[in-house]
Amino acid sequence: MNITIKVNGKLETHPAEARTLLVDFLRDACGLTGTHTGCDTSQCGCCTVFLDGEAIKSCNHLAVQTVGHEVTTIEGLGANGLHPVQKAFTECHALQCGYCTSGMIMSSVDLLNKNPNPTEQEIADGLEGNICRCTGYVNIIEAVKVAAKEINGVNA
Image (tube, rainbow, N blue to C red; front, top):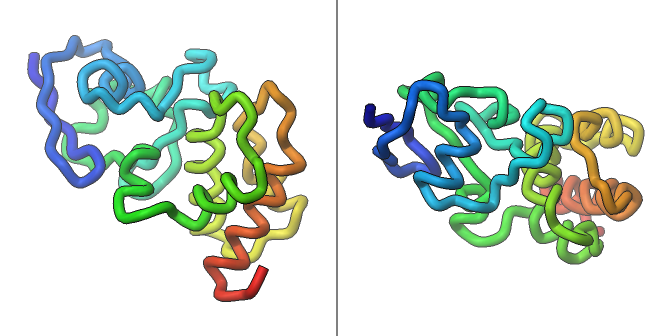
């Protein structure tokens, strides 16, 4: 069957089985490889995307479940230049191997959308569902703090 999903503002229609996971639809059918598969059990957060503006783990959503909804991937987040979180991750060296980065960034944006001025503990709590196997958490938390300042118009 063909599945049509609005991804990053564009309708994407591709053949897919009813059991196709959203992460696989995005990567394989749409060619959007910024979203990673890390565990297939929604434990690591590498596959985090936005569904109608809310962060979800795309490895535990079927593509057919998102028909009629809007999906935003890491590629869509930076469509008009780097998002402040993307910029801060680069400036603060919050990426090591890069595998978790897209999920960390998407979860960080979701956190800052809900809490624009989080404490370090709130950042740690907000990123709890994301795993960095390189243990880059210190720089990741710093990047979220820097991004929050930029979003709030405070000089870093």
